[in-house]
Amino acid sequence: MAYQKQRKSDEDDQRRPPPAKPVVIRALRAFKRQYHRYASEAHKQQSKPGENQRTVARWTRNVGVFTIVLSIIAALSACISYLQWREMQRQLAEIRASGEDTRRLIDAASKSAQAAEDTVALNRDNAQRHLRAYLSVEKVWGNLDGSNVTFSVTYRNSGQTPAYEVNAEARFLVAYPGGSVIKMPSEREDALTTIGSGMTLVQLGAIPLPDEQLAIIKDPKAIVVLYGKVTYRDVFNTLHTTSYRFQREKLSDRAWGFVVAPNGNEAD
Image 1 (cartoon, rainbow, N blue to C red):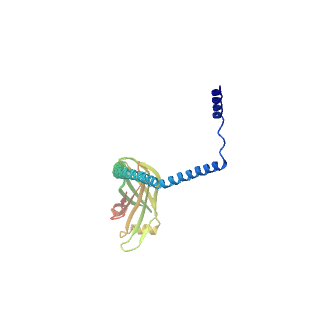
Image 2 (cartoon, rainbow, N blue to C red):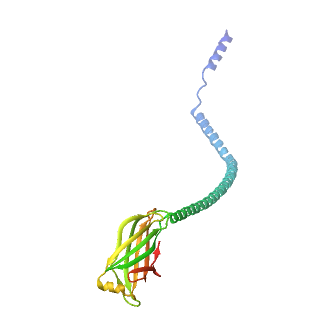
Image 3 (tube, helix red, strand yellow):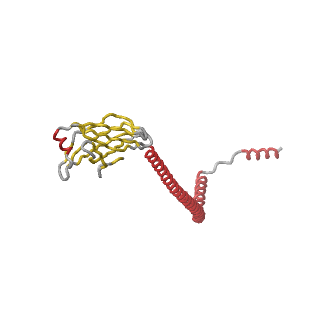
């Protein structure tokens, strides 16, 4: 019985919390814990220089590797850029060469086109010269009929096509060797007409002269000239002019023949 009581008393003592430590002991323990904390931190501070050196060495190594990698990448980029530049230069040279070839081809084509155009123009001109109308003065005749000077001028179209809008005029003048020139009244044929290929047109005229001019033209020393021009259009609508000059060759007192004068005869 006594043993059971003793055991129960021991169990109750175990269940009860230990009595609180005195304030001084708790303070000393707090100071001790704080001391150990500071000591631990100081120990850690003493061990940090080695770790810092290792960390710096590790980062330096990493930076060096990164720098090497960047250098390699930069070198590769430079090589690629150089190869691209060379390729661009090659393409540019090809473009320039192609441009030169194109320019030469264009120049050659232009020259060929110009030559063809010149050939066409030459052929056209040759065809027009071959086919156009040509008017010329075939013969001239004149005489005195009382106080009138009558004359005739024969025009011939020796071309391959007709002459259109023919307009002919004739004039007289009298000259003395080394002396004055006297122009007589003129006869002009204003009628517009057409002369076919191989056909002729005769212009007839009569000019009344006063007595003083009649006496001059009858003088055997006088040089009587019949001159004029004829204008016409060909089938290509080109205007042409034929100028003529004939000099009197006396056949009798009333009938005259005329010969071609040394100058003043032109045709286009």
